[in-house]
Amino acid sequence: MSNVIPTELGTEKVPKLLKQYAVPAIVAMIASSLYNMCDSIFIGQGVGAYAIAGLALTFPLMNLSAAVGTLVGVGASTLMSVLLGQKNYQATKEVLGNSFVLNIICGLVFSIFVLTFLEPILVFFGGSENTTPYAKEYMTIILLGNVVTHLYFGLNNVLRALGLPKKAMGATIFTVVINAILDPIFIFVFKWGIRGAAIATVISQFLAMLYVIHLVSNKNMLVHLQKGIYKLKKRIIGQIFAIGLAPFLMNACACVIVIFLNQQLKTYGGDMAIGAYGIINRLGFIIFMIVMGFNQGMQPIVGYNFGARKVDRVRHALILTMLCATVVTSIGFAVTMLFPRTIASVFTTDDELLDICSGAMRIYFCTFPIIGFQMVATNFFQSIGIAKKAIFLSLTRQALFILPLILILPLFMGIKGVWWSLPISDVLSCVLTGYMLKRQIDHFKNQDSQTRQTAEIQTEIEFTEKN
Image (cartoon, rainbow, N blue to C red; front, side):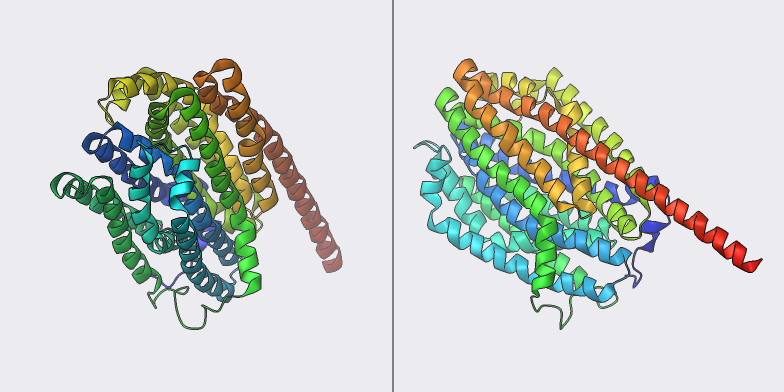
């Protein structure tokens, strides 16, 4: 393994870099989404429709756990990319050590708190006597392994910042393979039901965590786990949290939204509507993960070049990533519009659930061609360390648009109002995101112009002095 920091981020052609960094991330993200799909498919086929609805009840908690994880993982990896661009290697090492400790602390605190109040939380999330037992059984196992999850995902983000995207991809694929092998064994052979799916998840993540820790402990790496970097420092923690706050709030708000969504689905459509959302959410998750893969590929390129003040390369990476993301979300739109029932039948054979899912799927995915732009733009602000704008965009989409629509539209449209609240909010948030991104790009252009003018003046002065 090389001792070289990836300085090609500032010199290599942007399309080649995006391919180099995004493809492994995309493969890893697809693997991650398939990882979640395995649980849903095996639970749906092996346990039943109510188990699918029970699994959907856990989404807010899973989102909240992911929010805490991204607060540290994404914040640390983005900060490390910028510091590497500035060639500040000592600070990069300290960020690595602090993020390792923070992942353990956050994972423990989250698990202890949620386990204490798990059953009332699930009931509040929209659980019924049919679905809450399944959700509790699954979530208890997941929470017992939460520290493992945080360390694995946090350090996997770090691998990409250190120029090892293929290793990060390999770790994720490994978890999928192990999970796919263990799921049917634990569910169908051992008859452990939904609990078996959770155990398979924790075991696969534990093995992947050991592999990732081994990679970031390699002494041949200039930046690696070593003595003297684990002492928590307020300055570093503050910087990690400031950058990671945007994805944290995005996931935390998603948790709140799913709570209200589940409650409204239960009120207007019952347990089967919640089950339908569980299936649709998994499908959307696949597309989101691919776009996130592009975002993760873009992040070190943008972060490094922003730190190195190479504005043209920053703009190039942004535009190229947006184009790729839009192609992906448009394909997702086309497939779900044409084959909704066929896709849903992979998860369940229940006719009632299939009918609800088919109609809701077309509504949910109808605005997906514009989703890629919005996701990349929000991630872009985060990647260059402008946390306030990324936070603002995250919060406005969730709190300003989705939440009021979820509460108001069903009063006039019933269950369809719940489903339509999501695509309408996407359109509104895309308009706002486009406006803010245009202002930021105009600011870059002005900065670039001023830099060139300064360079021209400096050249004239040097020429005059020589003559």
